[in-house]
Each structure stands twice: as structure tokens, then as C-alpha cells.
Image (tube, one colour):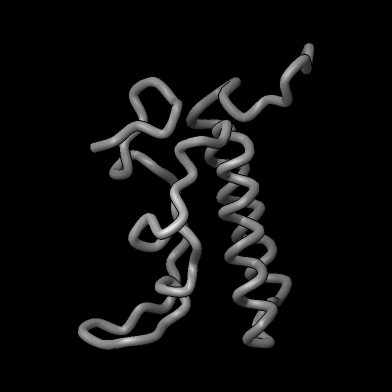
Length: 98
């Protein structure tokens, strides 16, 4: 597996949110994400920037579909929180002294 700038990170160790993706088939929200099939890889971004972009992308898709609810918002916040806990220090702002 490729790493995304975090030592020891691989795709199978990542925190994710379940999105609709019919199989077999076409369409589905997951296929609309920028990172699906690595159409627009995040490898040139910092881990913090990549996480922010992925969360923004998912939020935008749910908003476009009129499905951005408080539950989706909480789930995305949980994805951020779990990533910060699992990969401690990786998502800190540069220059942050906390």
C-alpha cells in the first residue's frame, strides 16, 4: 500500500465514513469523491490538508444531494476526531505548540 505522508499509514489502517456505492453498477456518492480511483491524489498535500479536503468533498456531495444532516456532520467530525486520536500529532497545525 502507498503511504500518504504518515509513517506506518496504509489505506487499510485509515478511518473512513461509509458512503453509498452500488455494486455492481454506476453512480453512488463514493464514486463522486475527488479521491475515488485517485483521480486527484492527495499525496502532494500535508496529512492535515488531505483530511480537510476529503471532509470538505464529502460534505459538498451530501449538500448537493440535499442530505447534509446533523448526523452526517457529527459523523464527519467523528472521522476527524478518530484520525487525530489514532495518528497523534500528525494533524496538528504547523507551529502549533499544543
